[in-house]
Length: 228
Length: 228
DNA sequence: ACAAAAGTGTTACACGTACACCCATGG
DNA sequence: CCATGGGTGTACGTGTAACACTTTTGT
Image (tube, chains in turn purple, brown, yellow, cyan):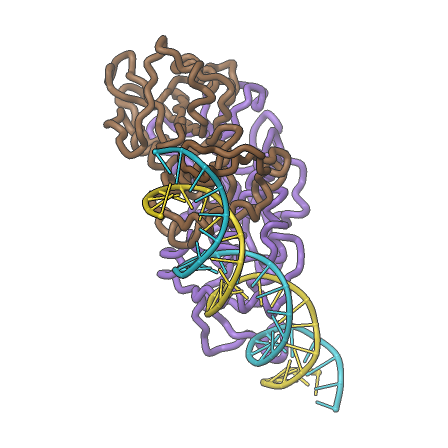
């Protein structure tokens, strides 16, 4: 039995949530869009395998991926029985731009405009989307998707992208700040408004310490968690 | 590469949370306590494989197990490279008593008094324990562990077992009832007190509909989620 | 009558939401 | 000087926690 790993990389460029895809380089389904996948070698752990596969197909390094799910239906791969361990990560696109050279044919797609994918990869993406929404509602996960310095309106925009809705900006900023996870900087970002919005930095120590203990980052969480 | 499944079955007998274990029947490590495990066959899905393995080793049928995690370190099995997909389930022990005949040598152990286990099975149990605590804090998961009719004090006792602490009974019952998930019966349970406690039934429809949308079943969830 | 468990009432307070309004500034 | 986005203040309702107190009934 073959053991594969498929990697789902979500990215944020300041405007949209995107998904990284590659053009499959071999048969079957050569030339179609696909997640980054490969087989686990007999002598490597799952962590090493996922890192190797991602690096080989996209150039990305030191991306922290998390195991999400295993798909193992008998007919999911047309050639041979293969189970696939789906891994996923979230990254700030700008921070990895240099690694994603044109040597690799990986491309970012807006999450709302993903092309048809091979095999059961669309199912994998759906699983990952649900997981993202669930986790980001309860934990400060999305904070990681932004540059080292970011503004609250930027963060709010990101949340609005993920949940495909709009939040009240005044309540949103208070809620976020009440966690004590953000450290206000002296400078302001004046790109998006005349008044300017303060930059914030993430308090890394508090972030890792309390990651699991912050709940309800979105208003009316019941509404959003219901369907997931 | 071999693909195995290991099954973690948590049970509740009205008093304690227990873990189902078997005595391993073959080398290596023959005669030691172990989770129920086996290999996935080329022609069966993961769902079928986990059900088959559990049935073969314990007699249990139609237990809904959930995929938890994959362990795949290269050295985890001394004989051959094996990855294991950990599955877990929660059951009301009394409801499955008949299936667990003595033909199979499966035994229940109090979760606090689990004997040494083979390979990395203790690690698997720890992963499952954390997962249980996390999920049960946010969703009405534990309601399933009780008989069709149960009292609030019974449910509270179960929560106290899982979180190894005590809750205020008055606030607990209000919180649970405020979800609207329970339907009060006319009879009372007089086994544990003279006044008697009302029996309740789970509103199955509401339960499945709203499973994801109820949050914070335990007081001070931050405290409990912090370390997980 | 008493003990012991079940459950109600009460209160203080934190939190969530809605929304009026003020602030800063580039054009 | 005003349009625009950023942000504070205020008000109200709901949820939570703590705990005094009542209810029930077997012994």
